[in-house]
Image (cartoon, rainbow, N blue to C red; front, top):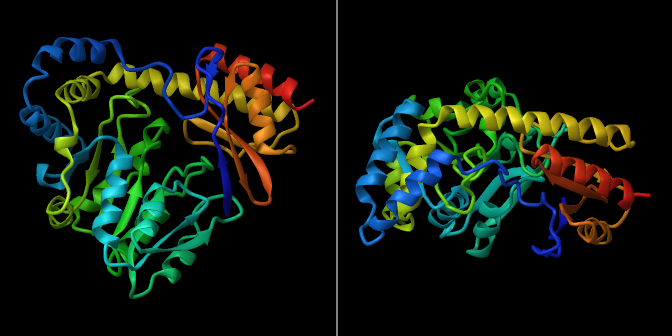
Length: 346
């Protein structure tokens, strides 16, 4: 379904609003910066103890045991490592289309195949269709919820029933990178299924709401057996530096910053959606830190016009048309985006 993802011609010197990579413009928090700064002198030491402490914090938060947690340098690393371990001997991955492609791309590069199931008309996952697509060669079912690049949510209640049923036939990987931007993340997470013993993997990242995209920390919640099956071939903790670990620990303790980011992101998203609609566009209702909508002109040309005004966005070619995906920045940055959009589409 996604024919092309058009990466903008990055020019940091002229960039006034970097809205192309779903980065959090407000982070990392002051407490994270302080923790990292103070830990630089420890750069000669491995961070095993800090990793163990962060794992214990995550396990308590998610209601599981430390043995159910695997760390990695961002959730994309964990997606790709899972694909390598499960698809090294071939087989297929079932997922929605469009969706985030890192796991699928890795699986295909090492000999696996992709069974794509189109999204429903409201851009949520077609769970019955995905269930029907699972066969005896399916190595993994991948669900990105809320989904990237569409921003839509598949209801937590429906997804839980799907996971309970389908995980008996194939392991399920639920990518929840954007979940914490929602007002009710607890109602939509699948992490609780791990504690119940289902073969479900849940990935979270510190790159989004924590504002630590460049610091690279993420984690996987899975059954102890599934964690062991992955870590027997690849390691995650060794890819993390002590500074990032200290930063992640500090960020988990900074609940007020996370609450503020959720509030600020929602304000920017609502402002942007209202302005885009008033200009005649039809954005998909978003539950994330970005908004996507179809545009009339070719994506590469549109992306260049926006960059010429110092605004970076991401353009997609899918559903036989071009789309603009804009990440949420500060309110001033979103006003720059709206002004650039008016110029670029007239």
